[in-house]
Image (tube, rainbow, N blue to C red; front, side, top):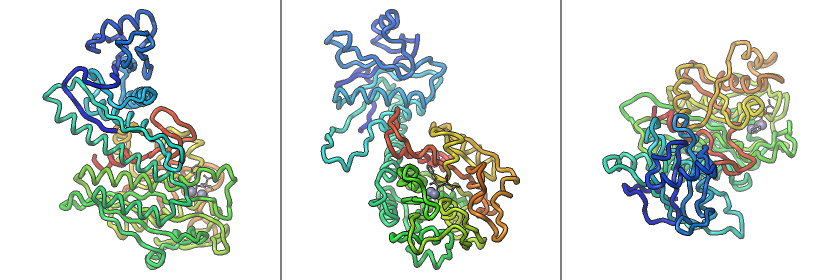
Length: 485
Ligand code: BES
Ligand code: ZN
Ligand code: ZN
């Protein structure tokens, strides 16, 4: 999808999209009478995401005009625009439209930046399909989308918003594709290659450590998880220095299980079916780094992924094992399916102790309990720093990706203490998302830390609005804005 802007009202195109604000049709210049007629005859109410295609009036003159409702002006948000435009773009696809023109787009009360960003993201995301393994895929020509009616003096400013939003779309879709690649292809080695490729393309440095180097670093917990697989682990380290005079460095740590069968605490077939997505956190940090570097943000960021597979073999770790960790704490393994926190404990410890980050965010498809608690629309958060969480909320407001903080009371920390080691890797039946987060928190020392559990938000079983089936790219944009703040 290509995006451009223009000052003119209607340009040459296959389809003209007319955004309509409810009972405010005088703002849709050039179409006032038509819209009034549609409202009066109740053919179209302008509700959010509602679509009316003028060709259905059987008037050839209007064959290519699609009205899209944006709802009530006071209630418009970026997220609603994303959803509405994802619907329109699917309609355009039915028409096989290539050139699309968006008429008058002026929403009072919503910043230009936000509205433009939402249009680009809504359309960009909705146009995505993962079909590279289909033999009979239809080759569709790239769509061109032009935003019209932009005042001359705003043209440059709007171009800037389009550039940023396009980068965020590309970075998010990269994360989706990394997740959608099957685990027989997307091994730790291939994930590392993907990070290196992104580094070259967008401008950040990538170091990849093999098993020998991981051993040397003493990452015992990470190594224990990786033992069951013939595909050896990789530690992927990405560095971007956009503000060399500043000593602040943000650490991003993504869970990188390229497959999670559960190990000896094996999952059911059903539970395993989507577990190629268990590197969704890793994909998110690769996407975020790509956007941060491409936009040349004035910040320093180090992103780390401990990539491996959780499988069964004669060499696998087992329930009952006691393992060490890079940070020195000993861990009793109660359940080998609670592997993410083990890899993350070492990855987070490495990021703080070796990369000298001053704050750290980990992002992980960590617990089924996050799905039970918050469903598929909201990412669960555990933190040791409310102020840092406030920043995350701001970032989340910008991206439209919802987050919610869970409590981290000391009582929950009791649940992961072991009788025979320092920690145990599960906290029992209840509060699973909190205890999993707090386990990682045991390795962050006093650094401001946010833990994002995207088990619910990283994957979709069905297509909806701007989501495709499979990986969602959850976290990419929120992490980008968090770095930018
Ligand atoms: N990768 C899973 C969590 C998961 C579940 C992600 C569903 C996405 C969808 C994680 O490694 C896991 O297996 N967690 C266990 C923890 C339990 C053993 C304490 C879980 O949630 O069941
Ligand atoms: Zn697991
Ligand atoms: Zn897992």
